[in-house]
Length: 115
Image (cartoon, rainbow, N blue to C red; front, side, top):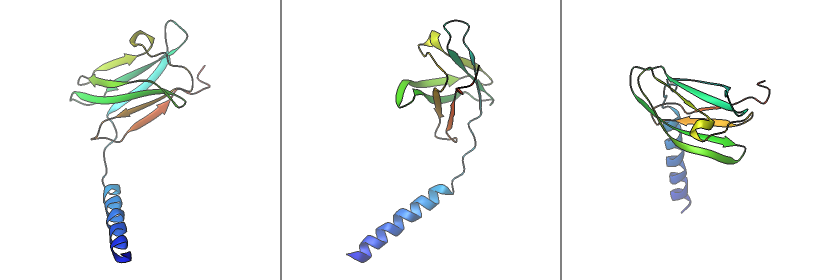
């Protein structure tokens, strides 16, 4: 039984090492934030840097709590903003996770000392 367990452990280790070798390009999106014009919150700005339409899945969080989750489609070289108008009131310290399986996941936050 010990040899079967060791063999399984080696298979798991080999799979982990193989997946580490995969190199994905960075997400071709420029992401910035700015103060909102109204409401004292912040707005995330997403700009697609590629010549193709791009779908990403975004998660906005405050600490351990998810504020909003959803899919965002960006046209080639297009731009979108997400803020209180779209139902997300972002504050200093809030974080963002942007994902697409073909790219490296982006994670960022609004600094607490932005102002």
